[in-house]
Length: 339
Image (tube, rainbow, N blue to C red; front, side, top):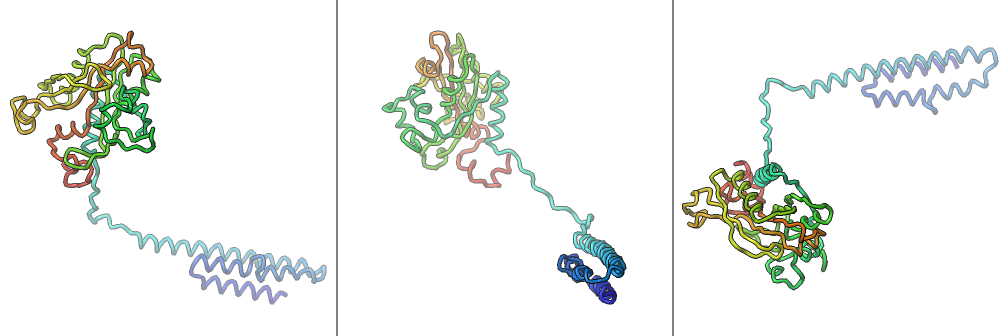
């Protein structure tokens, strides 16, 4: 049995010398020291030895095991050192080679102007409110004084999901949701995506962005609406900008108006951008209809308010003199890199 232990020790030593990877070392360990290994098999036969020989061969077997384990540990360290050296060689970086310039992205033109609009209204004391893009018919139309048979629905080609659920055509539903949850005073803007079944062309898209505004408090008048929008226009287009209000009709405001700004290209003298009129229409607004206030849970005899809505794409097109809406969504770097 002594000869067998010495043979196992010598064979293990030879195999470890030939080992070229940690996989080879592990295979050798299992072969000799594993549960079914050669040294383990010898130890199982020690029960047949006499009481005098058993401790002698037990000590020898432990010495063989200890020797093999030490050789394995040394070989593992040696292999690791070789592998690390090879890895360092293969992953070496020449720090003298010029680097590859990383292209850094920047804000989309829609985001640039939207952030400016948010900053302006936050400075005027407004808060930013949001609502779901998949909306109930009630919030999108009926609560805004647009019943099912109202002709205003004919001007909004709507994406219906079910008879009573749709992709919102405006961010106005956020007004109702805010009024239901918050008592006056209310001062919010509601920017977000809206959807209408429009054919894509230079001025239309089935997806676009609106910014809705709402103020509700005691004693709110059209004068407050004009003053708010005048401050907004001056901040966005310059201190020399003027606004004018023209009578209009919206189901959810009474009285209603369209708001124009003096042309920021010609200063009101008349040019191709303003079609010679000196004015450019940018948004619509008016005093919140008493029915809408009542639907939102607010007493129209005690409170009044104004609301307005503007298309973000329209603001951006005027701001950067862009004449085709499709450029915002085509991901053309030749266009986007200009901003």
